[in-house]
Picture 1 (cartoon, helix red, strand yellow):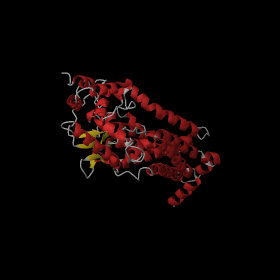
Picture 2 (tube, helix red, strand yellow; picture 1 turned 135 degrees about the vertical axis):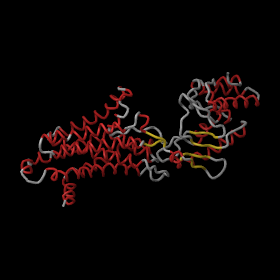
Picture 3 (spheres, helix red, strand yellow; picture 1 turned 90 degrees about the vertical axis):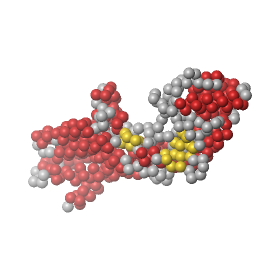
Picture 4 (cartoon, helix red, strand yellow; picture 1 turned 45 degrees about the horizontal axis):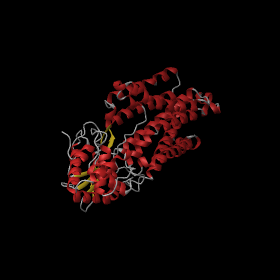
Length: 444
């Protein structure tokens, strides 16, 4: 019986059109930034969660619009005179809208998945709760919209809710940021999960748990308010929301940085079968062929021109660009990869080769003085045997000047100075790399 009523509600209510609108709007927001998530599952899910700042207010407004149906048809008194409990009568409407929200949210994800499936070789299990909690959030929003729309069945209520929800979700993070560390887990009360700019992390289980507890409590409060007849019952509907917020804050991560944890499976290395070995992280496995050629060529150049050259190339999931930079491994040429919309390397192969040879095969460190950029580029140009391109961070032609000066020295001295730069850069010490090229050794 209930299933038949639910099917009728799906056909006759605004549920179907709401689901279609969510899919269309979601896809229209995702694809302009496809370069940021294409070819990877977790970034797609996290971008979708970030766009909840638009989708959640939309669900609020859709619920309020649907709740006006009784008022528009002027059948409220007629239904109120029937002996059937109100919660039984409104449950199919709430269920239909909830099904529509889940279908629309999953449909939006499926629209994005079209660009991920052809190239993504790594499917993170941590993706599932990210998507599931996002779907739960829009269900909670639409039921809350039903409750508010029932109490204020004005034609202005749906747009007011949508605009108010949008303003709330935009300003909430700003308010919490201004409060500093006094509210470390409070951001998780927002359905929006701000994505980390990192393919090698996943969302912590405690963050999922906190959001689920809060959203379930909000959903329960919304339905109780929507189904209640007496004001006393409506007042009690706030109890689940208050308890849910308290419990959610108790189990939430202690700091915003703890919302994510390393994804060890994503960091696992996938390597070429031939030598010299070139490896990428599993999450970027589709870019291995793009890196193979430049990587092997860079190793060949370094082996021919410098002593103790690296013997393999590997993508590193961590950045050296922070204050406690540690020494880099001398035997492995580390690389940071940018991924394009198809899951491959975003840079052309020649640019990848320049990147690999930058700093004589080292990565940039945060605690090196500012004039290291031209020196690193000059060292790469020496290895390439051609002038440094001006487009590659050669401000004022400094790299070209260093390269010209280096070329005036005897061949053995050139090799010694580039080798000294590599040694200093590997150590990530506070070093004047330009001085290493001009003086021949790092200052003590």
